[in-house]
Length: 159
Image 1 (cartoon, helix red, strand yellow):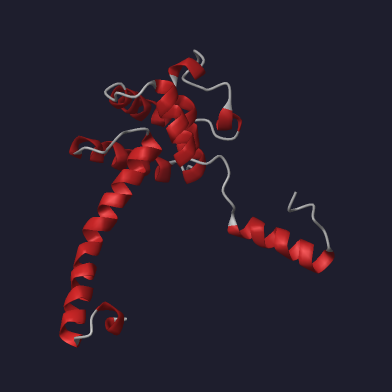
Image 2 (cartoon, rainbow, N blue to C red; image 1 turned 180 degrees about the vertical axis):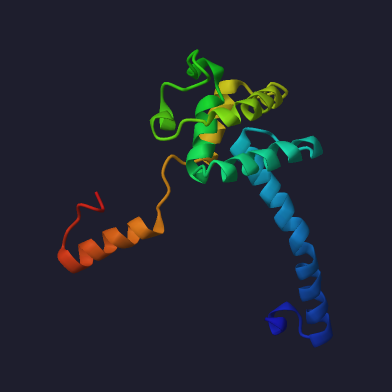
């Protein structure tokens, strides 16, 4: 790639090294922005690091599915869409993934943090739905559908 960066080899190496050196910071910023969107926040502040770390620890401890956890948080992001019993939504992925009781204190912290955000709850929830898909293609299921269709002409797994 060096010839594409500059005609002079030393200058090309310098340009490449600058890009490599910038990558960790660029990645960290993009990662934090993505997490903020997934959690319904405009941005992650330093005080939010423990909120994120604690969520991931709880997810690991309770073997929570990543996609379903964040989609469930989106379901819970608008209090108007939540019923009265322990914060369980009447719609969305609630039938697939119920928040473990051990996560309820974390949910309270998250909801307090959301209260500091300027966006309306319905806007926040809509943005979270865009960042937290209800369905993602699982490689093993996609492969199963492809194999059934190409090998047997069976489109049932695809449907």
